[in-house]
Figure 1 (cartoon, rainbow, N blue to C red):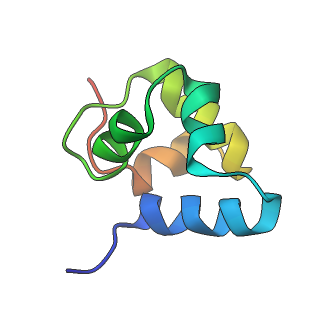
Figure 2: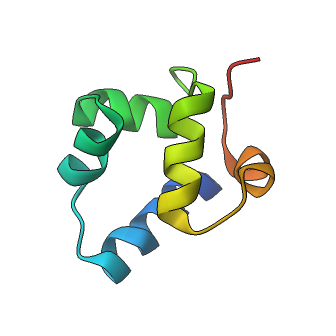
Figure 3: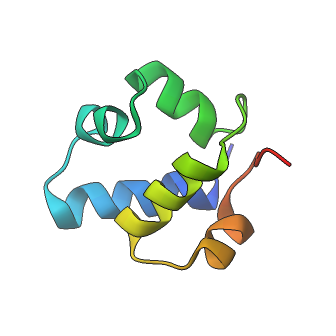
Length: 73
């Protein structure tokens, strides 16, 4: 199964920034397991977390919506 675009973007971010999954999860106030559940579309991503992730990735919130698998409405 191919990785989704958000997972790929986060992997690139981790390599470029030297951050770990734990660092990203901590910044969002969630566990690593919850982070990856959100990234893989199993748990909705709320707007606050979407904004935080978009900022980390250096993309607009609009672009984030295009790559996120499961955004809360």
